[in-house]
Every structure is written in structure tokens, then in C-alpha cells.
Amino acid sequence: MDFKPMQYVYEAVGNPTAYTLLLLHGTGGDERDLLPLAGSLGKGFNILSLRGNVQEHGMPRFFRRLGMGVFDEEDVHFRTHEMVHFLKELATKEGFDINKLIAVGYSNGANIAGAVLILYPELLAGALLFRPMQPLGGIEDSFETPRQQPVFMSAGTQDGTVDPAATAAYATLLNSNGFKVSTFDIPAGHNLVQRDITLAAEWMKDNFQ
Ligand code: MLT
Image (cartoon, rainbow, N blue to C red; front, side, top):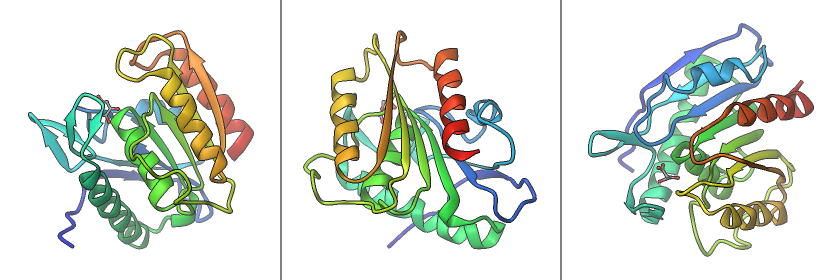
């Protein structure tokens, strides 16, 4: 397959058993966007942040879409395989534990993280999905994880981009396939607010410290 490498920043914490936060930005962002957020999620984590390989009118994304909220599912598959291939190679190069990745994704970044949960259910140690949408349809019982990894999801109750009811259905789907999903409804729109960060930091403490 014609996989391309990805732009990234990696900051090692100097502990071979550390978890690594895998930061995945939203549409139009880049690998620097979520670095401040990562600092609020606790200490002692390696930080790996990627830039999406797709461009939409000059804006980086992790996979193509056909319209607002309508995903090119063939590209979702391809880009998910491309990213996982890259992560596996990078784990060897940079020396982090591939089994200790915690995805931290916002919007489009949350959606590629969700595609990893579905297509590689055992890969991630956990995931924080801010304003996520289910990235693939028709997958009800086609995946399963025995690892029971924890997943954090926050939805904005006034989000004009993502329907909170669809987020609830997505959480149910992940739960029924073995993930332990905690969902949080936040009185906000599509943008991240302080409450997302506070709840995510508490969830990290409960699950990874
Ligand atoms: C997407 O993946 O397209 C979104 O969740 C919406 C966005 O990134 O703007």
C-alpha cells in the first residue's frame, strides 16, 4: 500500500514504561494544537502529536469527507491503516511502548481515533474523544476488544456539527464491543471548553495514575 509518513512531534519523558499521549487535532489544526491540552492531563506521559495527511482547501485533516459530517469511508479505512502502520514504525524508532498509547482526539482527530478503536480494537490502551462522531457505519458487531480499555467521550449539548444523540448511540456501540465508555454532556458548542479539560483530567487520574 502507498502509505506516506506523517509529520509529528515527539517528547519523551525518559521512562521506558510510560504511557504515550497520542494527540490528534481537529480540521485545520496541526501537530502543535493539542500540546497545551496534553499538559493539563497529568504528568509522566510521553507526548506524540501527529498532523493529518489529508488537505481540505489547505486545512489538514486525518481523512477525507464528502460534506459536513459525511465521511469518505474508503479513505477512513486507508488513513487509519496508514496511521497505525506509521505508529508501529515510530514506536521502534522513538522507543515508546505501542501497547501504551492513549489517544487524545478533538473532532476530526477524535474520529480517526475512533476508527482505530473499530479497526484495531486491541491497539490503544485508552482514548479521549472530544466532540466525536462515529467514523464508520454498518459495523455493529464486526469488532471486539477483550482489553476493556477505558474511553472518555465529551459531547457539546449545543454542538451544531455533532448530534449528541448520535454520540450516545456511538458510546453504546463501543460499550457493547468491550470498551468501558464514560460519556459527558457539556453545555457548549463544538469548541472545547474548560469543563472538557477538567473532566478529562479527572478521568485520566482515575484510569491512568
Ligand atoms: C469531521 O471529522 O469531519 C468532524 O468531526 C467535523 C470536523 O472535523 O470539522
